[in-house]
Amino acid sequence: MLETIKQNWFFNTRGDLLAGLVVALALIPEAIAFSIIAGVDPKVGLYASFCIAVITAVVGGRPGMISAATGAMALLMVTLVKQHGLEYLLAATLLTGVFQIAAGFLQLGSLMRFVSRSVVTGFVNALAILIFMAQLPELTNVTWHVYAMTAAGLGIIYLFPLLPTVGKIIPSPLVCIISMTIVAILFNLDIRTVGDMGQLPDTLPVFLWPDVPLNLTTLQIILPYSLGLAVVGLLESMMTATIVDDLTDTKSDKNRECKGQGIANIGAGLLGGMAGCAMIGQSIINVKSGGRGRLSSFSAGVFLLILIVFLGDWLKQIPMAALVAVMIMVSIGTFSWDSLRNLKKHPLSSNIVMIATVAVVVATHNLAIGVFVGVLLAALFFANKIGRFMVVKDEKLEAGHRHYKVVGQVFFASADHFMESFDFKEVVDRVTIDLHQAHFWDITSVAALDKIVIKFRREGADVNIVGMNEATRTVVDRFGVHDKPEEVEKLMAGH
View 1 (spheres, one colour):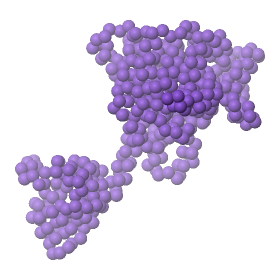
View 2 (view 1 turned 30 degrees about the vertical axis):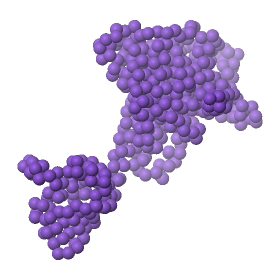
View 3 (view 1 turned 180 degrees about the vertical axis):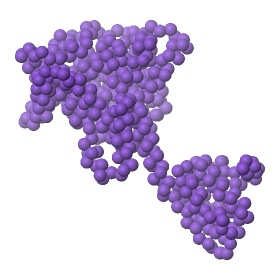
View 4 (view 1 turned 90 degrees about the vertical axis):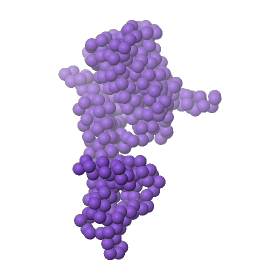
C-alpha cells in the first residue's frame, strides 16, 4: 500500500510541486476566460478548476494530466445559462458526472482504440491552433510593451533551460511569469494584467445544492446539455490521456479516467463550479515543467485555491503578456510538426483524415464534431481499402461445372464487387462456391450470397457452397435464405 502511494504520488515530489505551481498560475486567466464564455461569474470557473484538478488527481486514471474548466465545455453551456441561469448549469454539471461515471462502468473508455493516429494528430494540431488563436486578442491593439514582454517571456522560456544546473531544476515558464511580473511592477507598465480579466473570489468554496425543482421538467431542460457535456468531456479527456501517454511513455486506465472525470464534475457541481474535463494545453505545461505524478495535478488545484483566495492582490499584478508567452510555448510544443514533414510520406487517406479533423475542429470549435468526422472518414477509407482486397477466382473443372474460389473479406463495402465476379449468363450444370479463404461479416454480404445462389438456380444450375468457417456459417445460417424454400418464394414474389 505504502509502496503504491509512493509510486503514484511521491516519486517526483519537487518536479510535481513546481510544475503544479506553474499550471496553477496558467489556469487562472483561462478559468476566468472560460467563465466569461459560459456567461457566469469568474469564481464558477475558478472553483471548478480547483475542484476538478484535486479530485481527478486522487481518483483519475492518468497521473500527471491536468483537468479543469475548459473552453470546449464552456461553449456548450452558453445557451443553458442564458435561458435558465446558473442553478440549472450546476444541475447539468451533476448529471454530466453521472453519465461519465456510467460510461466508465460500461467500459466506453476502451473505444479509444477505434480512434486512428491520424485523428489524434489532427485533434492535437487543431488544439494547438485554437490555443494560439485564443492569445490573439491579448496581442491586438496593444502597446509595444506587450509585444516586448511577450518576446522576452518566450526568450526566457526557451533559453533558461540551457543554463547549467539551475535551468534543469526550475521550470522556465515559472521563471517567465515571476520575472515579467517583477518588470511590470518595477517599471509601472500600463499593460493588461490578470486583475483586468475579472473579479477574483476571496472566500473558499462552500457546499451548494442546485436550487432547482426535482421534477421531469428540470430533467428535460438539462438532459440534452448534460449528454453533450459528457460526450465532449470524455472525448477531450481520452484524447489528452492518449497524448500524455505518448509524452511520458506510460499507460493510463481510460475507463478509470471516465469515472474520475465524472466524480470530479459531481464535486464541482456541489461546490458551485461548472463542468470541466482534461486540458491538453495545461497537461503539456505540466509535463514540460517536470510534472509526472498525481501530486502535480493535486498541487495545481491546491495552489490555485491558495493563490486566488489568499494571494489575490499579488496575483492580479501578473501581466497577461507573460501568460500569453507561456500559452504560445504550449501551442508550439503541442503542434505535431512531424505531421507536416510526413505529408509526402503518409498515405493520402491518412492526410485527408488529419486535415479534415483539424479543419472541422478549428471551424466549429467543437472537438466532438471534429473527432466524429475524423473517425468516420478513417472508417470509410479503411472499409474501402479492405473491400478491394477481396477477389473471386474461377475455373472450369469439367464440362458444365464452374468452380468459384472466394478469397478475402466480404462485407458491405465489397458485396457489389463480390456479385459482379460471377458470370450468370454462362450455361453450366453445376456451380461450386469455395469459401475456404473467405469470411462473411454482415447481412449485406449474406444477402449478396443469397442473390448469387438464387440467380444460378434460376438458370438451372445446381449450386454447392463449400468451406465456410464457423463464424461465416453462423451468420449465413441465421440470415441467409437460399436454403430456405419458403423464404426464397417470398423473396422471388417481391420481384
